[in-house]
Length: 522
Image (cartoon, rainbow, N blue to C red; front, side, top):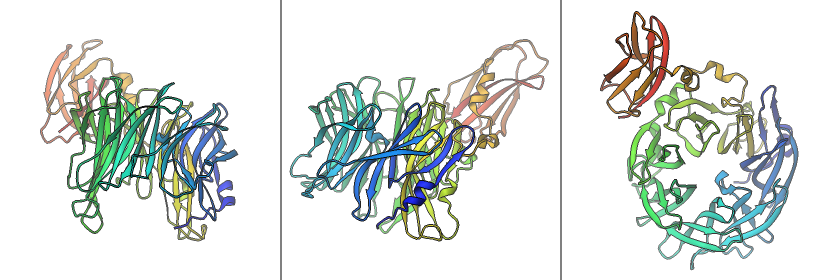
């Protein structure tokens, strides 16, 4: 299908919201994948396209802090039929990994370029990956600069000998010389590996996340979320499948971040299954998290769909795109579904602080059009907000006579709001607000599967002391009196209490004097 870009409409359809910087801006790209922030402006990076030949190139668009177009420039590797970057993880430290096709049309090639400090020119075309023969196709997914002279690439390539698509990690120096290279196949007669992220491990090695597609034309078709741990030389140490293998519904789009406790938090979805004719949507599609230790062992697992639903995030069939560490040591996660985008702020133990389902008004056109958008990247901005990049499809209607595919940049405030004050109607008191009162109450263990022990200290002896436990919606699920002197009490939780996040309120003479949260897993 060809996509038409109404340039005038795109350039004039810039929305600036007064007050704190928030805006929605349609770029000239067909897909905007990453963004850099400077003192006076942002630089959005995406895949450009020129009708009628539809030649792909990399476009760099300067946008001021209010969301207004400033300037743009394009880069296309000389002689290549197209030059394409995939998602935010394709670039790191002003190095961009891309896929190109040579004029001979002999197959795709993974490559890498380096840009100058302000992203105004390419200063070096450093490196190209040619897969092992007889394969001719490779696709670049990830570029990660680990140190000034060590750069990690993650690609895949089609092995024509065994009809499989295999993942490969390649470490090079800044000049493009190969330090090591390892190939990671998967099992089965039909297997396809699609790398997602490369992250530094706590021990100096690396973690490669990917998903494996199996049995493409079979009733048993499924996708598996995969984490591969390698040492600092790229040698595989362990491989795990946190969402399970061959389950009823696929687990895919896995994300992972190292946590402060020396472990790793990963997220994935289980959203559909293949019945031999089409994908069947999981009616109870869920968003899962697990904490993994350095040996690949699962410490705990929980699904947070119930927590997400409280925030009225309507579309639960997510494709997860990015999870990043924030300046306050919490995390931000983005994803997209059929008709909206999700951004969630959560703790390193997967406690939800807030969640938003975002579809700008510009992608809800009047008339008969339908539109949807996909988040591909997120970056924390200097004002504490978020800049998201993505791609939108708008189908023909009154305002758009032809199908339109267009990139975008979305600037949200620190609460994930596109509209000012959206957080004022949040359904629960956020953990950020609660923790100010947590000085007289502590809970362990958390997470827990059956009971908790609370320790409490009192500024003065009250006449009456009560402990109440509330779910994330604020409803009390357990209440009991406590001795009015300082102490420690073990509480056995109801076996029918569902997994999730809970808050303990310490109440003295009718006043809340301490609040602490814990996580229940089943």
